[in-house]
Length: 283
Ligand SMILES: [Zn+2]
Image (tube, rainbow, N blue to C red; front, side, top):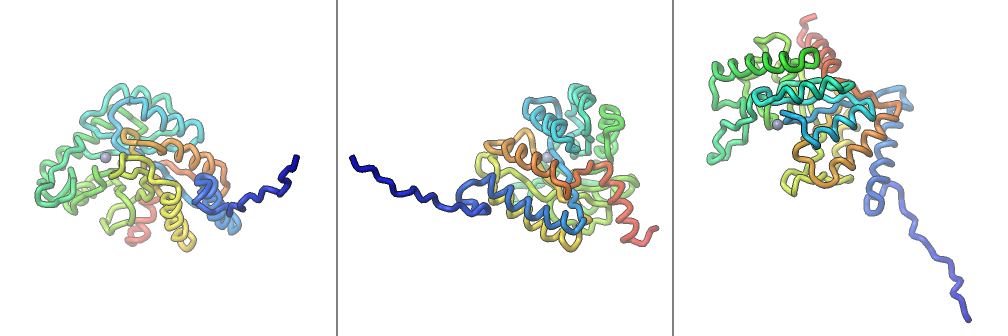
């Protein structure tokens, strides 16, 4: 009998190649980036905002468990008008969850027929209407969540009109959080940057390579200015295939890396206020 003894040549897989092991490639690149900061004695700040909470759901449970398991502060953007007592009771049992202010009812007032992008606190509404909803919303959140409430306003769909910003300024202590780049709203801002959902495709995870590219952009920017936190953005009620798997992998790696500092919205709002005062000469 003749045996074929030729050695099997396994293709060498370059660790950073996304064509093969996606999680492995993601971990390889992210670790290299974070090591760069560690070698220079720098840290990268991260924060986590999850939107659209109203009540307790199995989907929210998954995220609350991640927060507890990896000791990662969660900033939960709660919609005030429909928010429930059940959610308030559940959050009492969590280790590090803050509640931030997510609109009023999450209702669109812009005109889609005219091609306008969805917004609840946009230019179609009067200051009077919005001021009433902001004050009422704050009261509800403070009554339900007490000390866990942080005055950080997250406008639904991340869109806000300039006259709404003025209303928040009049409240004195509000910060603002939207998506991607900081705009000059003249309020302390804490932005979100990494949205993990592919909204137009079954709301699944955007994919390891896509999330790597988004993180890489932010991490490269932090090399010259590490002060701005990188905001992870999730929407627990919409998480399709792959979202939880990504979060588990991402939290595991970043919670264990010495160059990463996960911060709460309370800590970041204090810091954003100080930076805002310094930048505007109000020291
Ligand atoms: Zn929302």
